[in-house]
Length: 285
Image (cartoon, rainbow, N blue to C red; front, side, top):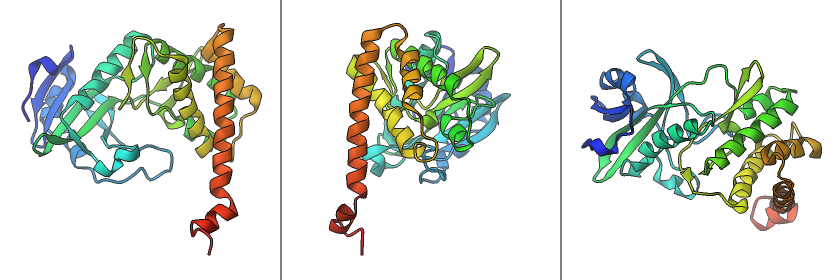
């Protein structure tokens, strides 16, 4: 795959290995050229083994002298039929630029060490992404499954982190409880935002765009956590207060939008799970 110099973000270079082409941070280039991350480009397909943990398995390894976490990039949603095949290299390179731009804006997100490409046909390729590992950082889904009780600080930190991301103009597109990591710091927990695939920047995010991201986060909570670790209305409001800061109008707007989403979502879940619905679709025999 041809390397184009003007595609490279500052501080990154390009190199080929036996298994593909890589764009990586300068301190990782030699290791990438030696093939230390090539295995990511040939990982088998399929979802993660644990429900709620993303579109595919991740691998922890050492890239050069850096603790890294990597995965094969895969489509989600309606595009999952395409598996891990992409047109061009732009999606991978955009992750480097998004992470660097967010970090400059004060958003906690790990640096992208490298993105890799392996030709899979004319104009299409397999892609992999390698990020700096955030050590001792469970995600919110794992914390809920382990029965954590430190909810007040977590909700505050999560609300603040999502607000900083939105103020930077970034729409995550897959904001969920598995993509928020907790790092314990002297002043309290700090939330790292990961998995920036498919995200994009806008000059200014509207209230509806902000609410859509938060609704996606709420949907993941309702799907994976609410049945065993419910949050009270006061606790949910704590997240919104941290997100909205002193903007009372935004707080009322976001709270109203999420309440409407919650009511609609619960009605839909009840309808899909009703005996009459299952019988009519052949789910009850």
